[in-house]
Amino acid sequence: GIELQGPLQAKCRNAFTSRGYSESKLQNDVVGELKAAGLVLDEEVLLESWYLIDALVEFSDGRKVAVEVDGPSHFIDMRPTGSTILKHRQVARLDRIEVVSVPYWEWNELKNSETKQRYLRVKLSNGQIM
Image (cartoon, helix red, strand yellow):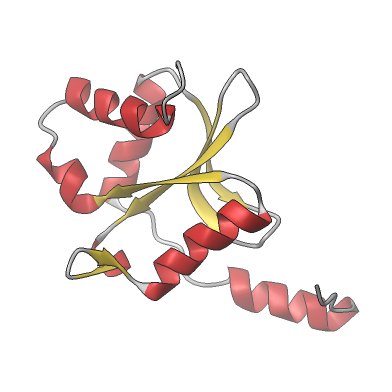
């Protein structure tokens, strides 16, 4: 790849990472349920690719999964926008981290903490025992 030098690299990094960050009620709810499920995670993690992800869950076997809480602005007609697809793809390829999306309409259908935690465990398990 192309490696930028000194001040230009710093300017590009600042431009890429300085977008306004606003935590949503949806994101707070998802992260709260991840914690309630006893999962080990960090919130608002800036990755080596310079992408900011909502939560990074780390499992005892060393596996890491990025959890992206995707609200209405991430979709057009319930299909991911191009920028959302690109972010998920680049995080998976550049950072070598699996990305799990929590779409707002799926989350809004879940009625209580138990069903929310079950939903998250299924999303994060990817066929593996948790």
